[in-house]
Length: 441
Ligand SMILES: O=P(O)(O)OC[C@H]1O[C@](O)(CO)[C@@H](O)[C@@H]1O
Ligand SMILES: [Mn+2]
Image (cartoon, rainbow, N blue to C red; front, side, top):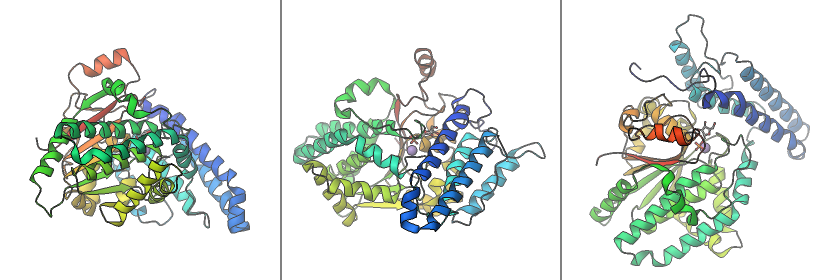
């Protein structure tokens, strides 16, 4: 891939990538080991001695992994047969082929950060599937659920807001509808502050009412293409024939509070008729601590439905109904948990690429998706987003993300320099956000 900037990597001592590999990832692994320990008696109750043996095995595999990482050992191929094992091992060979030295092997601190970080989560999964009968245990489930419960008050506020809005949505003028659209978009943006991998797996829930903070947070939106999203979707609505559809695909990120904000956005898109169908994509295996799997998705909607709070349960009932009626479709694909950047999708997962091409708009939630959109490279800040996408244009798309990694493109000249002077951690604190659109004008 000539002409592309270098990948972010742990080679750059002191960089966010370096600190993540050195500190944050081992901390996450330690937490995973601790979680398994704490569930020992549960494994025993469920599976007897075999459950205890499995817990020991998984812990020993994970301790080995932590040791490999901390001593910067070569990255080894995956061994357990699974749907994506061959693709992973081929990618490892590809990484090896990029190294000049004849005996150079991909290693934790040497190889691209995106690759090694994804590999770490895939190895956690390998340790679990190598340890039946606890091979369906989600080591992050507990923290995802905790995030949901700790965000209760904010969730109530959001569900109440949405249900109030539903009462009048049919009567809103165009400009009022646009204002509301911008609000739900911003809710979904700031929902992305709450991922658990940045905090090393520690709790990171939403405790304040996000709706009342939206105005104050506006100055922190560094790229704001919300107007372009509005023109695209309101145009679809105006020109749509009676029976035809407008499909918005949402590539989900974190479960818990962020997922609620995404479902609020998705419900709004249907109720406002800006879209007629929503496709959600989640992860097939536990990923980056807080990412959404089908179990999290179903669990969360069930929690809402059975809540004692009137508006929370109304949301749960409505959302379950959207699924039943096929207006909301949940899908997954192994590509989302591969290490490839998205420009490789048409080669590696042509079926997924072809499916995304059918969308009128694709919303990519979160930081990891942005890293994969841009290839996690050392781009200049002012390079156009279109260029950084490196040929990935299945349909009009927009990244909705708070910044948690040292990659950002499409800024105005001088913007990054000003930010660096006033707030040196602007790229990694999650304090700033973007709506970055790519598509025809
Ligand atoms: O959930 P998000 O928004 O994708 O954020 C996850 C981010 O957190 C980190 O794991 C922090 O290390 C980044 O690697 C990653 O981009
Ligand atoms: Mn995430």
